[in-house]
Each structure stands twice: as C-alpha cells, then as structure tokens.
Length: 454
Ligand SMILES: NC(=O)c1ccc[n+]([C@@H]2O[C@H](COP(=O)([O-])OP(=O)(O)OC[C@H]3O[C@@H](n4cnc5c(N)ncnc54)[C@H](O)[C@@H]3O)[C@@H](O)[C@H]2O)c1
Image (cartoon, helix red, strand yellow):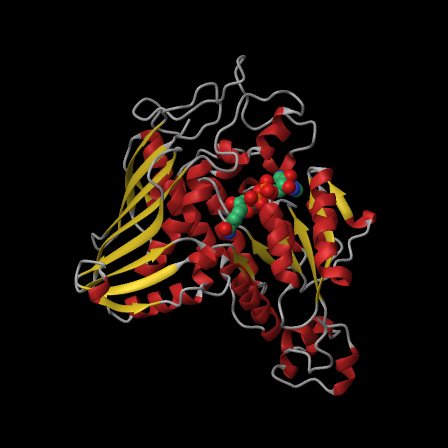
C-alpha cells in the first residue's frame, strides 16, 4: 500500500544522499519536500521458498508502514520458487514483481537474489538453518537488513560465526530480525513485563512441553533415489542434524527461548535424557523423546520435555514458578493464552491476570516492528539473541545426545562443525553426511559417543 508523500526518515535520506560525507551534518534534519517524490519502497527478496519463507514474505508485504515490494526469489528447487511466486502474486498483485529472470535456482541463488537489491533493502533467510551464516555474511556485505528464521545456528562453530556476523551487522547499522516471534506477541510481552516487575517474586523453576505426533520431516525413510542425497537431506532437513539441529532444535527452540526470555538470562548448563523407540526402517538422526534439565546461574531450573510420538498425551505450554506466584502460557502463535496466578496453583480462584482470548499474530507483529525500526532508524539487533538462543537449544540437545552435562561455554567452544563446507556446496556435491550401504545415517549413542553428537 502506498501511503503517499512523507518526509524521508534519516536512514532513508542517508541511503539516498551522495556523497555520504554530508551525513553527520544532517542528522535529525527533516528532509524538504523534493524528497517526497522519491521512491521510498523497501525491496525484499526471499531466500528459501518453503512454508515459512512464503509466510514471512506475506507478512513483509502486509506491513502498513509504507510500501514494500518483493523483487526476487531463490531456492534450490525450481517448483518451490514457482509455487511461492504464484501464491504471493495472487494475494498481493503488483507488490510481487518477480519475473522469470528474478527467480533464481541453486546454491548460489541467494547471491543472485541479493544482487537485485540496493543497500537498505531487506533479505529474508528462510532456508534450513545450516545456510544461515553463509547468507547472512553476504547480506552484510551488501548492506542489507536481514530477517532470518530460527534456529540461526546448529552447533558451536556456526554459533561463533553468527555472533561475529551479528557484531558486524550492528556496526553497519543493519537491522536484524529473528523468527522467535513469541518475543513480539503482545500477550507474552505483557506477561514478561509483569514477571520482570516482580509479580511472581524470584523465579525458581520453569517447565515447558512440546509434545505431539511426528510432524514435518521428523522421521525419514532411506533416500528412494529420486534425487541426490544432498537434495534429499535438504528436503527432509528436520531429519538431519547438520541441516537443522534436528527436530530438537527446530521444534523446541520456541519453548526454550520463551522461558529464558521470561527469566531474563541464559542457562549455564544442561543435562538430559532422550530415547528412540518406534523407528522401524526410518533412517533420520532424531530421538523420539527428550527431557532436559537446564540450570541457571542463580540455581533456578528449566525442565523441558519434548516428544514426537502419536497416540500420547499432547501439550504445548510453559509454566513459570516464582516465590509468590505462577504464570502459564499455553498454545502456540495466535492461540496463545497467558495467565498469572498467586500462590503455587494455577487455578481460577487464584487468577491475577490473563491475556485476551485472541491475540494479534506474532508473525505479523514481528514484521511490523522490524520494518518500523528500519524506517525510523531505531536500534534493532536480534541476530545476537538468535544465535545465543540457538546455542542454548543445542546445549540441551548435545546433553541428551552424549549423556553428559554440557555447559554453555563448552557448547560455544565445541569444535564439531556438522557441515564445515556448506558455503561451497553445489548441486552435484556430496552431502555433508554420508549414508551407509543400507542408506542409514549415524544416530546419537549417549554414553558411547560422548565427545560429539554422532
Ligand atoms: N518461526 C516459526 O514459527 C517457524 C515455523 C516454520 C518454520 N520455521 C523455520 O523456517 C525455516 C524453513 O522452514 P520451512 O518449514 O519453511 O521449511 P521448507 O522446507 O518448507 O522451506 C525451506 C526452503 O528452503 C529451500 N532451501 C533449502 N536450502 C536452500 C539453499 N541453500 N538455498 C536456497 N534455498 C534453499 C528449500 O528448498 C525449501 O523450499 C527453518 O529454519 C524453520 O525452523 C520457523
């Protein structure tokens, strides 16, 4: 939607002004009317045209803070690009300007798509997380603001890379958004504010559940050889630790992150259990159940429980216990319900506060906040938080996969990089993880393989 003429913001003016040396002298100046005719459209490209990428692009195009246009798409599968282009064109019409020559395919496609942008535009990174650091690095080189999906790292080495890149992006005043959208959910923000203001007293224990049947590519049969092993692993990325951090990182980061956010700190260590039950001929690397005990510096605990088995009790909730009260959050996204109670029992008679039944979409809210920060040049740096959150998630996963206590520092310094040459992959490359003769991949063996996860 074109909101018509308005004074350019400082960041837009600096982008448009040449030479850049005038910038500091003009800080805070309202730009004269001549700039009102300039193109204040933010251009967006999408890397990774899957379910979430298409959703994020739709959120970008729905932001009401001035015109946004989608100008290029990139993916390793041509049919994904075509589908996303068609779906978005149908819904957003002229705001989707992605002719054939701006639909890019392959492992270099991210570069070609970002080359369509000018500094100050936005790139969406929505591939499996293995590729995040490669694409984030190029985005920074190009001076682009970045929205990237969670998790943003899968192991220690990629976290170190992302932390360095987060600093570089911040130095260049590039805004970074990370798809931990619960942090933008108004209900959860209000709950967190009350907790940080002390309504619960000191937090002592948190427990969080993500338990449902197998979803997405949680488990995989051996590659039926309709595509290369590399593309098969990418297509079924939740099955492979190098690509996604496995189901543990991909699914559970939301719950773990939300609790740490409420607590206001990251845990210092984790110990965990996990088991693999009904796997039949499936060859993926995931366990079916995970139970993690995270410990914070002040001794507080977060107990996390994850399960992907059909026919069992299902739960998606987090509960936070303090010395004076208890807060709970149930359901994902818009179905989320936040409540605070006095005492230790979350019962109706003890209710102190509850969120409205239906809350605004946190997926849209995170985009409204992100684009507003770009247009108004407000600080907005979620990349560091995203990397730390991904690391803490990996810490719980590695504790389960090795059977050892894993500290934050050990996870950060862990030398095992799951896919060290992911930046050099081509369509005909061998995959980072090779199957055995029966098409099986190495699975975690707690207590036996303890220095690495597999
Ligand atoms: N915030 C949320 O609630 C949420 C929800 C779903 C997914 N996600 C995250 O979004 C990311 C994508 O998940 P999804 O469910 O959309 O998966 P998906 O498989 O539907 O989409 C991923 C897309 O990336 C493409 N791709 C893979 N490697 C690529 C590469 N190197 N270059 C270009 N394209 C590549 C794939 O072909 C696919 O089209 C994951 O990190 C996932 O955790 C977040």
